Image 1 (cartoon, one colour):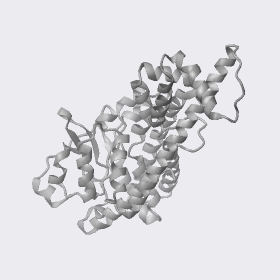
Image 2: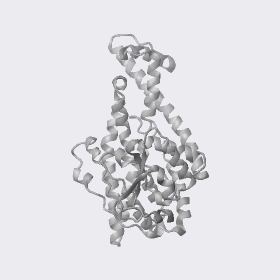
Image 3: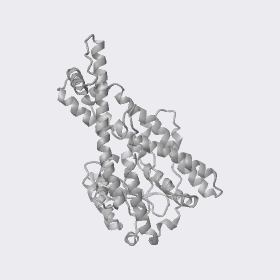
Image 4: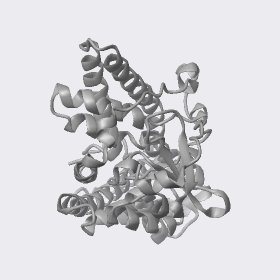
Length: 380
């Protein structure tokens, strides 16, 4: 913790047992070491709150107004800019925080490596939305032509004229939806944005969520194997805590992601539901992002620790960053997943004090900036 924070003599850390994911907050990719793993959430009166893990590795968190960051700590220029823009954000979600942090990184405040990664990420996401929009249109065409055939109407073959097929499909389906044809195209574009992180079934390339889940499962396997090989009881326990928490998150993801993918199995029904009430669909599509928020950094910490000695150091930091799973997840899953595992509190262990010393702070800032570039490159 900075000298400024010490002088203010912060009160004892509070227990943290959020009921909802919004109460848990969204991980903010700060580069200031003491703010690692900090989360943002809406506070009273619309004010943004910051949830900071106990910097001494003990139980509990500090919850404070977001505007106090620069008074209590010594954030980097990148983090100050991030702070100001999040204060002005219309909502606090994993997607909005990612968008803000990506734009700031693209401006170069997290270093050249993160700048290039952010710029490439912006182009990649734009291309992914275009591709997803095209795939949704493909499904609309297929379903409209199938409907017309079942209704006994002759559907002329236009196999090599996708534009005319799309116009015909929209003209066929718009009256059944009760909206003008040009609105159908606009809705498909909006749905491509809504679903871009999760994607759709039979998608040609893995979605962002697919890649995070794959990285999570790889981390589970590697950390579990590493933990079994440890002779030190504390290191073995740390490895087990991380791998078990990751495995529980992965098992929940395996339940909720198919629910999102199923939305587009019947594109006409999907459009009807969206027109009638889009809010439940948006909330369903956001569930995987809320669940997996924070795990990119944890997985990257493990991936970038190249040898046994580095893994032994970083495993404590990973355990310190483990996201709490709120009780809201009970509404998302089937009864099969043991609820006792979800409501049990994570064991909190003291961190290796070496990584928090002032002498290493600049090395940690550089490390965190490198992690920013890797997070922005997720999916490449």
